[in-house]
Amino acid sequence: MWPLLLLIPFGPLALYGLHRLTHLALLARTRSRPTPSATPPDAELPTLLVQLPIYNERNVAARLVRAAGELDWPRERLRLQVLDDSDDETRAIVDHEVASLRAAGLDAEVLRRGDRSGFKAGALAAGLARSEAELVAIFDADFVPDPDFARALVPYLADPGVGMVQAAWGHLNRDASALTRAQATLLDGHFLIEHRVRHRAGLFFNFNGTAGIWRRAAIDAAGGWSDATLTEDLDLSYRAQLAGWRFAFAPEVVVPAELPVDLSAFGSQQRRWAQGGVQVLRRLFGSLVRARLGTHVRLEALAHLTANVGYPLVLVLALLLPASLTMGRPLPEGLQLLVLLAGTLPVAAFYLVGQRLAGRPLLRSLVDVVLALALGIGISFAQTRAVGRGLFTRRGVFVRTPKRGDAGSPYPELPALPFGEAALTLWMAWGIHCAAAQGLWWSLPLQVLFLAGFAWVTAEGLRRRLGPAPVGAAPQVAEQR
Image (tube, rainbow, N blue to C red; front, side, top):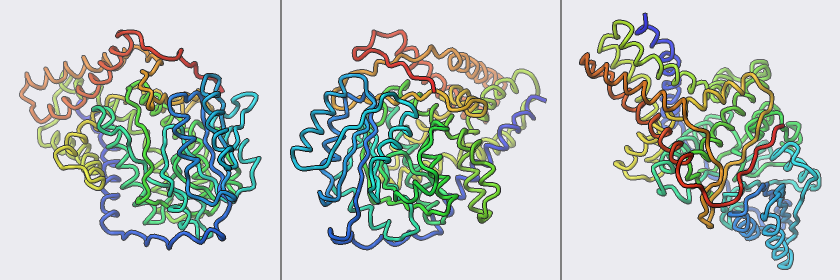
């Protein structure tokens, strides 16, 4: 009985693996869309509003404001808003940098609200209400756009049906650690394969919250920014496309950004994305089903919005693998191999192609793919809880991702003790022992990968929690909505 239960999580996981393979097939079969023509003359460029939502970003705020102020755009058509909800020394840093830009002749202002209602979505909406700009560029605090960012993207908006154009993300600190290399691998797959394929095939995809330019009319037509979910960017993206707008992706435009170098910071980011993604699914599922869309568009959208369901499936698989070895007759070795190949190789191939598209050497790419798979497994316990909150709660807690920036100060936030991951580490170790004792060698590679993932998260959590006290600002308490 126990071995057969393995097919319950493996079946859906194999389908998601097949979905990855369809992306690779589409990548090979579909041609790149032609790069738009050159940027129009300055006299024909529309007004561009640059919004910088900031909350307690003392390490990176100055870098961001300076980079935004250096954007190559006619000064009479450029507006800069720093949407600063900070309550720490970031306020003084922002005021100083914006004053410098104003002295240089740029139309720049700092907007501060009486409270943080709506968080990032609320700040963006408040800033938008004060502007009549036709185009809106948005950058999170850890991004550093090149001066030619806007001129490179705006040709995509020459088509009046395009409501948003998204740039690719680069990684300022890709090789800082195994954690940053794993994150970069995951993100490269998302941008260099998923976004590229969805754009080429005319499928729905999302604005990633930063490093993109919106057409103001598309935001308004979709109903504006909403704080109904923790992923306001994904929510607005789907509402805009359901309203008939098309999106564009510019893979040749890369905006470098900082990856979290601390597992607790990365974890808080991923939990917010998972919970918010499920909330968007709940909110828009009916609209997607009822919309007059091609079947392939609808299926891809549902696959996109249900992707976080993979985390509970991985967790169930982690629980069942050792149990199948101790509480019943294991699956035949041939079936074990088939299950292993169907559940893991498509995902590994997907991320390996992403690394090759990113120009990474083959050997390093192979190592980074293994790191990415282990990391995804290791966070599955926490991500499953986030998926549950997305299914059964409204809104929730918005926890910003801490940034290290040039200051080099450690992150002050302390993670919870990783009891769940520690228990799963021991459980997988027991499963490996049982498999080795029974000579079930085909089951070992997958279990070792699971063990590595859970042990990684456990070790990092214990190191941060029980190690020397971090130096830096006082912990910032997330607010309840």
